[in-house]
Length: 281
Ligand code: SAH
Image (cartoon, rainbow, N blue to C red; front, side, top):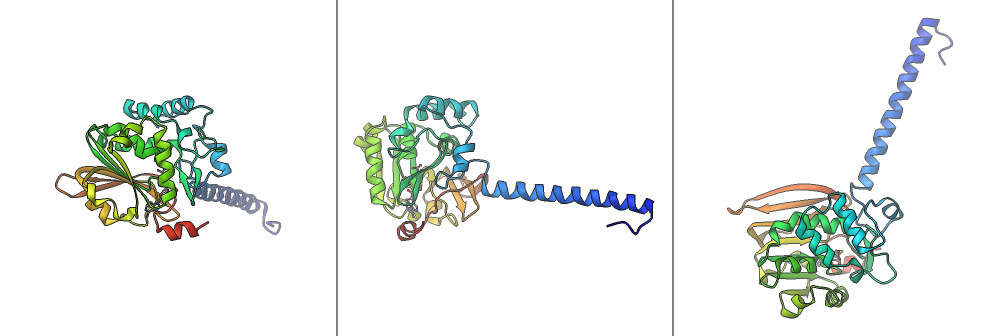
């Protein structure tokens, strides 16, 4: 390619060629890294259990206790209260038969919904821990299997109040069955924990305001009704976005102003209408 040039120039050109090649490799590597981080967030995706999730999830285990140990040793579970509540709630009680419950991956639960990955349950519980003290109120939108709703109820205890809102009636019925087999069953019986079949985008104003609001499906924008139902001094954790989503933490200050920050990239099922969810594949 450089044959027509004098030797000195040819070497310079070879240097340029090598440098260009190196540049190209670096650009390709950078683009590759960007694409990888875009399609596989720091945590495994919340989309139904892809092969990648199953192969590369860091905390998967063969038993409930080893799953919790992995989440603790990795620093995903940090507080004793979150460790205690996750130890009490065996994920196998909440996952459909035939699935591998201790895989650190979202698993399909029917109706185009998933149970979130254990590390996401742990992350959300950690973010909300201070807002799930005994006697507090919590709202779980898109309660799905009821795993987190049950965890919230165990944390706020018999003087607290926890409401799960889910728009698929069959999932609500299944979540009631799941919880009846768990340590949270007495809280369901006493009415401290209840579920409603409704569109969670409107929240559940009857029991508002809540110290904790968790949304288990990704909203394209934060619903105003949920902000209105958050107690001053309270916290909401909500995935926001469409294909690319961020897990947002919104703190309502005592004067009613909002402070919000992003924790991590995630991929949840959308917070949408019942019809759109059932139509999507
Ligand atoms: N935290 C739950 C996540 C379930 S997946 C778990 O780990 O089991 C998200 C759930 O949100 C699905 O069950 C889906 O049916 C529900 N959902 C989506 N849009 C909703 C809406 N507008 N109102 C209520 N629930 C909704």
